[in-house]
Amino acid sequence: MSAEDLGTEQSGLSVPRAVKAAYALAWRASPGMLVLQAAMAVIGGVAPVATAWLTKAALDELAAPDPRTQALVWPAAGIGALGIAMAATSAVTAYAQGRARRAIGLHAQDRLFAAVNRLSGLARLEEPRFHDRLRLAQQSAEHAPDQLVQMGLSTLRGVLGIAGFLGTLLAISPVMAGAALLAAAPAMIAHLTLSRRRAGLVWRTSPGMRRKLFYQMLLTDLQAAKEVRLFGLGDFLHGRMLTELRAANTAEDRLERGVVRVQVALAALGALLSAGGLLWAVRAAAAGTISIGDVSVFIASLAGLQSGLGVLVQGIALGHQSALVFHHYLAVVGVRDDLAGAPRPGELAPLAHAIELRDVWFRYGEDSPWVLRGLNLTIPHGTSLAVVGLNGAGKSTLVKLLCRFYDPQRGAVLWDGVDVRDVPVAQLRERIGAVFQDYMDYDLTAAENIGLGDVEAIDDVDRVRAAARRAGVHETVEGLPAGYRTMLSRLFHAGDEEHAGEDDKDGEQAARTSGVHLSGGQWQRLALARGLMRQGRDLMILDEPSSGLDAVAERAVHDRLRELRAGSTSVLVSHRLNAVRRADRIVVVQDGRILESGDHASLTAAPGGVYARLFHTQAEGYREDPAPATAAAG
Image 1 (cartoon, rainbow, N blue to C red):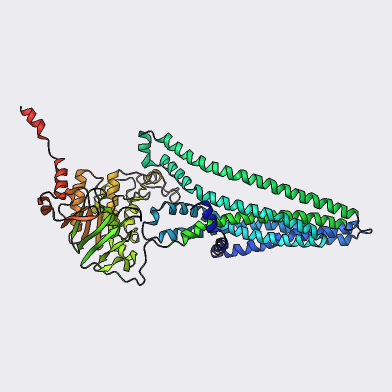
Image 2 (cartoon, helix red, strand yellow):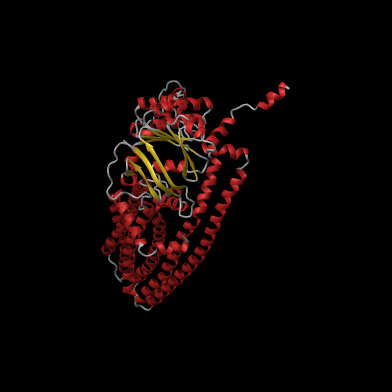
């Protein structure tokens, strides 16, 4: 979407919609502070006009042939009272605005990430444009709602002041009142145009700024640091980061030069109007057509009207820009789920017969190649299935469809004959345990890293320890400085605030403060324990569960997994064919289809079979080359 398209899309009714949504957020977040700010805005708009009229009354009385002291007391007292009110209004407004801003920001962030969390699948998170919009939504959630609320309140304050000063000018000189209003028209047009250009610039530079953040992350990320240091990538990434930042700065500088030209022109127009008004007032006073008090209130009204119009125009322009950016927040908050919901979702019964993929076709985008091509597969209840194949064959995609991270474009995934699209996705996933190849390393405690596998039982110490034992990582965790309470992170401190001043045992405070980072194999065992927290689920999915383990650890893990999978329904994906040989059934996936199916013995015995060729290729890597032995014997 171009900047012009963005302006077209977000003009018109989208700005009032954004303002309405911002005030709805403010009302839900902090109604009392919103009412208080509105009251202060009314006082702030009326007080300057009242002050100008009281000043006129005092000056007229002073210019009278026989000024009365009592007649001067009330205007002076009124001006003093209004001064106190204005000072108090400023302080109260700042307090109310701060409280409202924090409450609105909290509520806006809550709604934003609740909307992201409602996305059931992965498709949206694979769209670069959605990430651009999400980044802008996060930024606008922090500032735009409050800016729109403040725009409305400043508009209220400005309109009240402008109405009072305009009425005063109309009473003294309708011609000068009309001139002041005409001078405000080009200012309004110019500022609205600039606000649209600013919003377009934000959208246009968003991909580059996201790339800049990516390069910054690579320069500071611990996992990337090894390659960055070894391959000398620091200067390269640093240069890429600066290139993106310079491009954004250049575009912003170009826009700001236009802003300066417009502001200089508007300032010159305002100065000419003020000079002309002052000249008229002096000549009218000299001719005796207006009084000294009229001159005072005229000058105050002209200055107040110009200032009020300027503030009003800039506030509306800033609000307009905020509304255009806030559109991204509203788009994300209102985003539809990437998985279609069933019109009448039914209950998902425990698996009793089989899971079936029937004529499944799938690809990741309309322009992408088919990953699965009419795949048919049945997984009987209580059996273990192993899926093997070369990279890109579709193994991981099959796992994603089983977990319903995506829906197939054609065909269906059936659970005891029920299409999984006809049941709530949360119910389906509640019946699945999984260990993924691209597992997560959470910067949390060891116990939390395991307990996240079943968050409802995250505080169940016995279950967490049992899962760790099944994964063979209990002794490793127990040996950490604080055991299961050890923070597994080099980014965050744990418990510094909670445990400040406490006397910890066995160096636990040091572990909380510094954190501990595990090896790759230890992290993988921890991820396996996390998956095993869901013991007793209907389906266990193991996607390369031992890819980071040494041979001894891999053998121990698979022996243990075979015990745990006995009598349950499981799917094991692995490149290491030695790990799958004891599965009840093995399928070979190639080009998105099931090419071969059988047990290990039948597949290895098949002449010219893909599985047999893969198995023997891997086995040859462990056999000794007889050539050196022959040479030595000779």
